[in-house]
Image (cartoon, rainbow, N blue to C red; front, side, top):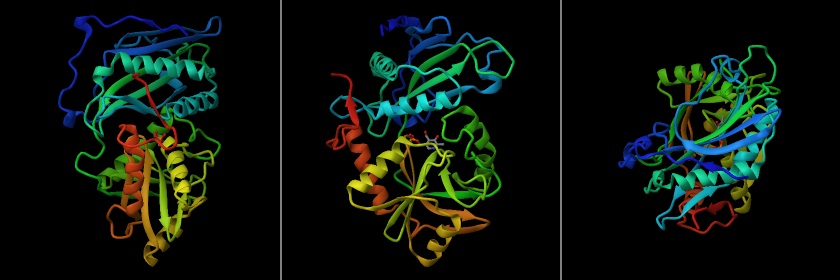
Amino acid sequence: MEVTINRASEDQRKPIPTDDTQLGFGRYFSDHMFLYDYSPEEGWHDPRIVPYGPLPLDPACMVLHYGQECFEGLKAYRGADGGIRLFRHRMNMERLQRSAKRLCMPAFDIDEVCDALKQLVLLDRDWIPRTEGCSLYVRPNYIATDPFLGVRPSLNYLFYIMVGPVGAYYPEGFNPVNIYVSDRYVRAVRGGVGEAKTAGNYAASLLAQMEAKKKGFTQVLWLDGVERRFIEEVGTMNIFFVIGDEVITSPLTGSILPGVTRDSVLHILRAWGHKVSERMLGIDEVVEAAEKGTLREAFGTGTAAIISPVGSLNYKGTDHRVADGKTGELSLKLYDHILAPQYGRKDDPYGWVERIDL
Ligand SMILES: Cc1ncc(COP(=O)(O)O)c(C=O)c1O
């Protein structure tokens, strides 16, 4: 695939933020974006990198009404050696392809979009922060563009990728979060679109998230939509519990997003010889383990934080502390084991990191 490149002119370019401590998340976008169109007549066509800017969208376009879209989130890292690296980015594009299928959107060529992603990151490489922990966030987005209000799959689509610098998730250190177990709202149900990374899932999560925040909690722990008993995810992360000598995470039942970090953590834990289970885990079992003192660790996993230790769980008005409420040993070890190769600080034993600037 030949990507046409139309570089931003001097006056279209924006100042690159210079203070990495003030980056935050999702506030800055680089100078370029990748666009790729789909129509039934031409298939995928006109792959191009253009100056970053507003998209011309018809107010009737289907994504704005029925949410036929899917997206991804991944990062490009700059190491102390100046190397620019991606982490298992193909897995994100494969997940996007599965999300698209669930939403009746046409398949794309995974290698082509991976290649476009690399071209965009390299073109805007000056935007990749130099501080470890900071990175260039990559957001592929795939939307339905037919100007039509009937409920059916769109015929025309736009695939685009935007990138922007983001700050370290833990600027003040690796601190455990307090989470609120929602038994009122659910994120997704089996048979629905929970396993697809699609906008509606995030819109559906906002009210519970707001209520948890108001009560003083950082994240919501989602239970299954049928019995409201089994652990599913925490906020926008997958979740792991260490009970006794068993490390447990929910199986991919259809309502859970199959996280790239989840998969990586499972792989590492198995390589380290831990007893790992992907099994249904009731909140009652977690509460009982906390009371008996066998709940040794709990942590969320996701691209944003890599590992997010859980300090306590509030369920039906009662706080249950996870061990001593401090970051667990396994959480710390996993965090460094994943982070260090991303910045080229340690070897990459599983071949997950690709250096793209050579
Ligand atoms: C709902 C949800 N679960 C889990 C994850 C973690 O996935 P990953 O490890 O691929 O970032 C994310 C983030 O993308 C998410 O939005």
